[in-house]
Image (cartoon, rainbow, N blue to C red; front, side, top):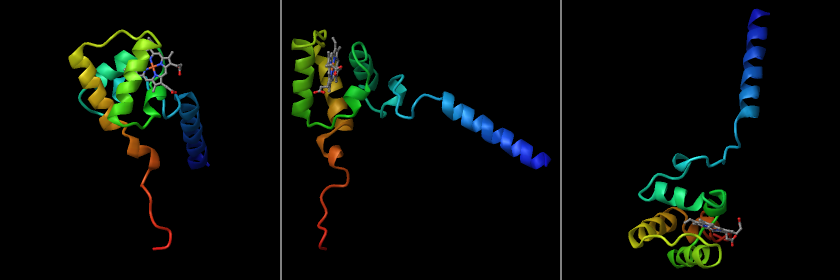
Length: 112
Ligand code: HEC
């Protein structure tokens, strides 16, 4: 009986911890993003206006990321980035959130 109550107690504690924890995909700081050069710069440049989920759910080519950054500046009033910072952030985004990622494992022939 003692075993049972302590097990139940532990389960309740775990359930409570899960209930209080933020959703698994919350991005609260740069450390929640994939490791890499430019990670902190990207986080702080983009989080000023919207959540990083807006950014990380994308999978784009370098050219599309370039267009996105231009759009943020021209349409949404993002501060223009310094050239080296721009390069750093652009490289980080295209390396860690590339277009291919969106299709998962890629196309496989179902008849093989
Ligand atoms: C000055 C404000 C501002 C900054 C800074 C900013 N954005 Fe945005 N961004 C917006 C607004 C406004 C939208 C459109 C509304 C929304 O989706 O929240 C948006 C939307 C987006 C979208 C979604 C576009 C779509 O078609 O759904 C992406 C991707 C994006 N931003 C990327 C970035 C990246 C990457 C950075 C950092 C380098 C960044 N943004 C920084 C204002 C900003």
